[in-house]
Length: 200
Image 1 (cartoon, rainbow, N blue to C red):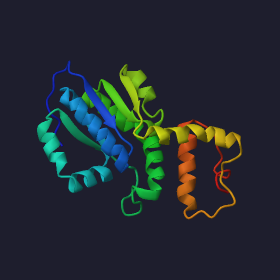
Image 2: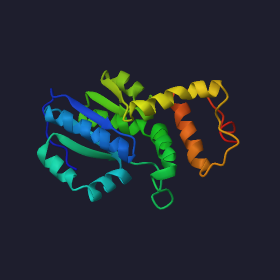
Image 3: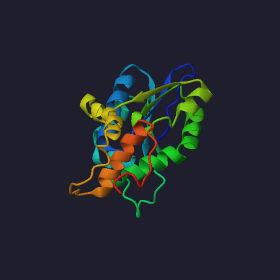
Image 4: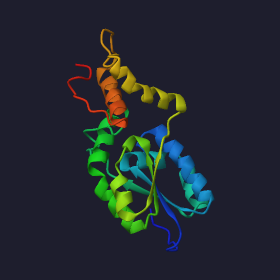
């Protein structure tokens, strides 16, 4: 998408959701609310999610026409599309890749778009903390989950203390999915862990 010309003094917000439907939908609503306030918005998605968003959602073009200060940019999910689905059970791989390799791309977009504020999906942790400090811009961690879901995340450290995690002694339909979920919980709260410890 072409970048719209903008005044140098205008605030410009970079919004970067986790590449999953619920996260993208919530942050797209936030982008629209900010665009109503006549703020420049760059909405960043992985290429896979952006292509799905454009092909499956007729409202996107209408949104761009209604808010000329809103633009979309893409970032690689750092996986080959034919070997990795980019979503579903293996979304954890994509999130980890973005955390490990996405910082240089974020730096480039901050410079080229003259970003003055980053609204980052909370699941990315401190991905942009150093960049925000380096460029002297605001960083907001946006949680797209409900309060009851956040409470469940908040309780994970206590469950670990009480030896309730990892879960043992029950039949697990998808051990990989549960393992990825536990890793996300631990990552969110910066809790050190061993991969052997999680669902051995």
